[in-house]
Amino acid sequence: MLDVLIFATLNGVVTGLLLFMLAAGLTLIFSMMGVLNFAHASFYMLGAYCAYSISLYFGFWVGLLVAPLIVGVLGALIERYGLRRVHQSGHVAELVFTFGLAFLIEESVQFFWGRDTKNYQSPDILDFALFTLFGQEFSAYRGFMIAISVGIFIGLYFVLTRTRIGIIIQAAITHPKTVANLGHNVPLIFMGVFGAGTALAGLAGVIAGPVLTTFPGMAVVLGSIVFVIVVIGGLGSLAGAFIASLLIGLLQSYAIASDVGMQDLLNVFGIDFPYDHPLADLWGLTLPQIAPILPFLLLILVLIFRPTGLLGKREE
Amino acid sequence: MLEVTNLHAYYGKSHILHGVSFNVQQGEIVSLLGRNGVGRSTTVKTIMGEVEPHGSIRFKGEELVGKKSFEIAHRGLGYVPENRDIFPTLTVRQNLVLGMKSTKATGRWTLDEVFDMFPNLSERADVAGGVLSGGEQQMLCMCRTLMGDPDMIMIDEPTEGLAPMIVEQVGNLLQEIAKRGVAILLVEQKFSIALRISQRVYIMGHGKIVYEGTPASLMQADDVRAEWLEV
Ligand SMILES: Nc1ncnc2c1ncn2[C@@H]1O[C@H](COP(=O)(O)OP(=O)(O)OP(=O)(O)O)[C@@H](O)[C@H]1O
Ligand SMILES: [Mg+2]
Image (tube, rainbow over all chains, first blue to last red; front, side, top):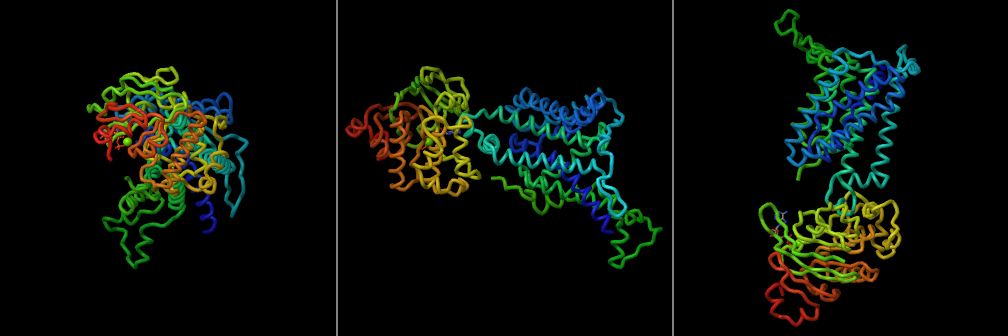
């Protein structure tokens, strides 16, 4: 029991941190643009594919460094020559633009890399058990994922709260006009934030690719969960996104690790259903089976009971 | 220093400025007075590029029309908006740092100097700007602009809603700023402070300059004050 709990927690943290790497960028970009960027997870996918291709020639580590840079520069260019122009036509146009972009990236990925799953592997150096507990191994690669995410977040936190440029970014998000009047180039700042956000998404793709498999549907799979997270956390709140990311990561991980079924639950209440009942499938459901829909259930609950999300502020 | 000629501005279809012309010379304090809604704030916003300008705005000999707000600020024109737009979640110190255009304040004002001038701000350097009193927020807002070392500042209604004693302090600060060679365009509605510290005054009515003179001549002109200013 304890071993299951510990490993489920560790895996939940790995997933949670990975989700936050996407959710953080999405949240910052949302605060800036005022609309959700539907193409955000596409940059995550692009990161994985770029890193895969680079790793074929130069190895995993070069891919880890270069792929996020490529994705970030691409993101910045898209902001500069696409979104910034569309911005003048209002939020709906921006939303439609990001939708179109998501499809474009997905189609391009299939065009260049094909529809099949790529054999993107974690590096050999990290192919050992970091530790073994109760006879179960925790892979060094997962440890590496935790370390790199935590490192990035500490760096991000430091930059945003302790440096001049971080302070300018914070202020530009809430008071763009005032910041411009003080002599700061706000459009350039926004381009930088967009680029950094997409680079983070790309990095998430690079480190997730070997574990969650690199295939053309990976953006859709993770993207929908990331949207759930930023809504649950409260749109625009970084701290909220962090809490929601870990919450969803752990929730899914516990659900998958548990072997509880509806049957057990009903038994607790002293109800017992025969297996030949026409609705037997319903109480034959197990928690691991419904794990994928848990985030969406949570989303609905949050929207009903706390529409602004966990740490979201009320619209004024 | 600043030469505005035949300036027009619009909010959507409504024509707000109907050919405003005035000037501010180096080191001068000039007041722009007028009743509510005559377009004083729109004038400074238009000069700053927040509202699209039509006409000519020359600053230190250079045309500002067509430039972006941040470029105008870089030319040395500072702007303190009317709503005391401080960043409430950032600390006093961070608010001041935001005013600097590069990593170091190398101009007329340094962080330490500002803190020396305003013990209130220095005591609360690491407190969130949002908890300061109205007067302190106004001082912070002015100091933030000074950190960018402007050659001229435009201040929109700095004394609005402040107690008489604080109004006095704001007036003294403005004179102190002018002494360092910074020209000031003071937008006001109360003319007592404007008359006390400015060398010249303009009065605006319905999107135009309707009177130009000195504080002394304005004191003589009872008819002008009755027609264009609230007494
Ligand atoms: N964003 C805006 N959109 C449309 N009209 C505006 C806007 N801002 C101001 N106006 C209008 O423009 C006119 C001039 O406004 P402005 O703010 O320049 O006045 P003001 O002289 O500064 O007066 P006060 O500050 O006392 O309100 C007013 O009639 C106002 O209703
Ligand atoms: Mg005004």
